[in-house]
Image (cartoon, rainbow, N blue to C red; front, side, top):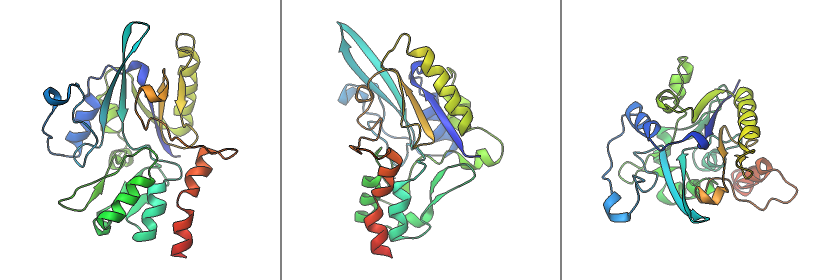
Length: 244
């Protein structure tokens, strides 16, 4: 059965334990911090080839009170991943989806993408996730710690989370937990919502408007009568036709 995360932002304290655990598990090098220069505790400033996960900080004034919203950003492991749909046009098998776990995996073959093609693969992602290492050409992102899952262990970020923000399990179990938490939180936070729960395997529980977390907290799409899953599938239909 496919696996899913439930990321309950109402419980996130921005300890960044998940962010550090991700770097340690994948043995990613450090980034130079820029807190002093850009006026935010969020570091690094954005996702990059050495940060597959980033706790985003967003502050805004509401009724005279400063509100902080924390958003542990990562790949959503889409049910229909546009990155893979487009990647297959350029190099078949460069991006894989593990049907058992639902993990979307970028392989060494992504080095074969030209810089322009890599940019198009990134642009196809409605959450602006994949990053290219300009030195190696490799594209990378969250792997869902797929090898840990197959070994019977939870993802490193889930293991490290001390507050219950990061949850992981069978998809149906996580959807049920999300709905249960949502019902409870709506009593205090009427704007609470699950972000794109039908389309992704990393489901965020937000207690505020998505824009008050991050520009790409949800997949923004004027889809009319279509579901977002159907919309995401149409993003790469012209490229599939070209390949055929």
